[in-house]
Image 1 (cartoon, rainbow, N blue to C red):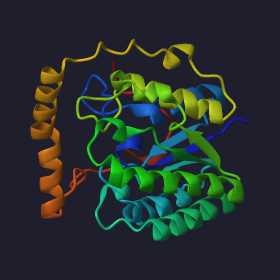
Image 2 (cartoon, rainbow, N blue to C red; image 1 turned 30 degrees about the horizontal axis):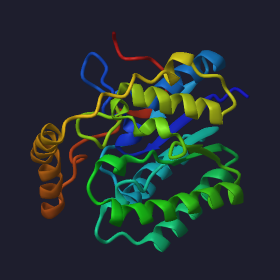
Image 3 (cartoon, helix red, strand yellow; image 1 turned 60 degrees about the horizontal axis):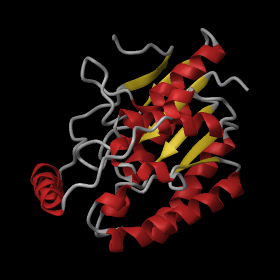
Image 4 (cartoon, rainbow, N blue to C red; image 1 turned 90 degrees about the horizontal axis):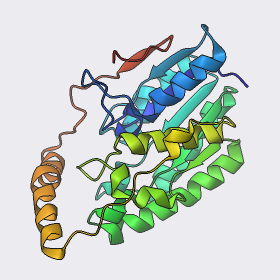
Length: 258
């Protein structure tokens, strides 16, 4: 099948952090997938990426989903909830119910819908005991939703290569360029397309860091990334404040300048 209108909605995962173009804007897995779909579909192909970093599930549904539906795409990627599971007021049953409803709305248009089981980001972050059960509950529900509505699941959690720190950026939360390429390969596989083999090539895992050096790295990471994140939570701010979608309109795909 050749998809002619692809709209991506979500948060930083879909926006493309931390996979920069030379001009400092972000590429990410969705741009990589769009580039491949554009080759297959030809000049009529259109792509929009409405994702904005830091967005919670409710914001994505209220702001991005209606805009996506107005574009009448035949392919939609919906990746949401990752930021919610990190919040103290996370309401799992409510999010799962709303997730199922949204996927049903998207599928009712006749579009193919991609949904995600996220890679195990918590393997290198604090809070595993709290967040782990939430993620497991969400992942189980995603499978049930996919079966109920005929959505396509991109199961990144089942890929142990994402435990390799080389696939993650220095903030330990967002994917590095190699991680985005691996996600793009999984997405194309879920669409029945063959990805670039190089996207699945993973650099060797780094040698274990001595204990003292590792603790020093943890302290530096906490100061540079964890403390600002906590400060934003306490002050009600988001990393996505004053950020707009990088590709808000359905237009022919053009890559950033190299």
